[in-house]
Image (cartoon, rainbow, N blue to C red; front, side, top):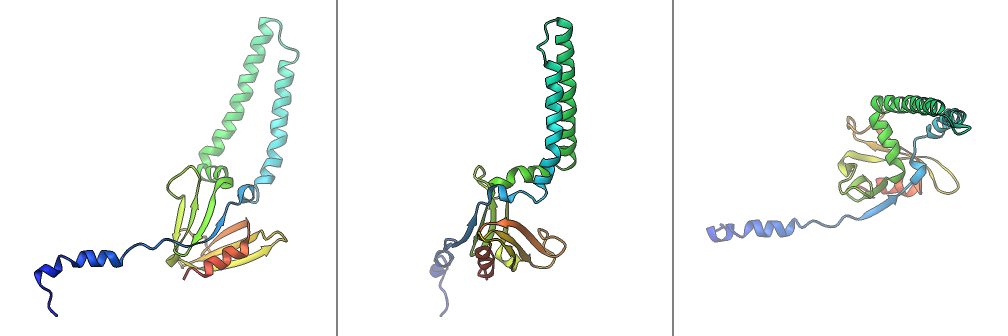
Length: 191
């Protein structure tokens, strides 16, 4: 049946009605907290702790007993400033060389991982936009790793070959994820 000029005005409206956005079905949500920190974080903290302790002992030695004379007070202020500047210098070198890694470690305990029927989303409670989002067309499936008795474990999300978010093997790895079997199952049901 040929369309008249009057009926063509109604086509976009009919087309828009059929394209109504269906709500996403949330299939998995995780807030790993401190378990989301990278595996080497505890090792780094073990090596940093003696350094911090020695800096506090040095400051204690500078300020004990409380300086009574102006010359000893100037001495204490000078060496406290030197120690503080050296400490900030080391932190600045770390931040300057690896700002993305340091920012990622600082954000890791607050990230919420959500798997829906359409995408995988990493978000933070104080940001409106997600940190990262992967569409279901980019996800092939999931691989389950070792799981402890509480259901936390390791997993990998397999992405299509050549995906820019994947590592060299084409995966994104997750360590110590809560209810990891539900995560892998949610990735498998994204199709």
